[in-house]
Image (cartoon, rainbow, N blue to C red; front, side, top):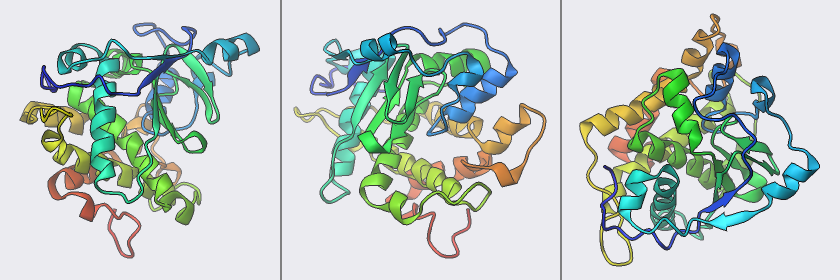
Length: 292
């Protein structure tokens, strides 16, 4: 349990979109497919083609435009028993937190993907993993991806790990609307690349948000979540470890630091923990002389 059972999450604007054409949770994929799934996690590229997906056909694109709200997500109990509702609750918390920390804050859209759907940034599915699409200012996430993490990569992917993941994607939205992405555009790969710095900053942002999560309240003054346990925090740190570039590349038997795009497992754990412990003030991964 993470959310307070009586917390009101009915005000969420999370959407559901898509059709069931992507990989089903529990289905088998090869080693390359597993690596593709995890590489894609937390803002990675669209690697659907590696695991049998691809761009949707014209009729699939039409179907993927169908949008439904998550009317069933009303309370913290719903968030504790349903991954989509947990993301809907996280949306309310993230918007409350960032509205207090960013002048002129603009809310992103959050879309739960049902199978797969077309976006301006490529196909969204559980094969591509959660990602942020800057042109749309939107986060896309297929909740069955958490099951794939658990079943096919051995990650725990519990409730707090899931909040870390969506918090990371929100971090990219903050980078977009505050000009970080524009000031520090993609300059290739490597351990000191802008790509790595961008991802580590998003990890730090996620940690900073979760540091204050228990203070965030619904419209009735009810805290959204309970104080996190040590086991839940370890679960979130485990998620950060799993998506380290070195850990991912080890699955294919060869580690090449010059191809890094997200940072090592140690770096991702450190920046998440630093944000969680010390808050937003420590999250400038682009500052001169900062040690990644």
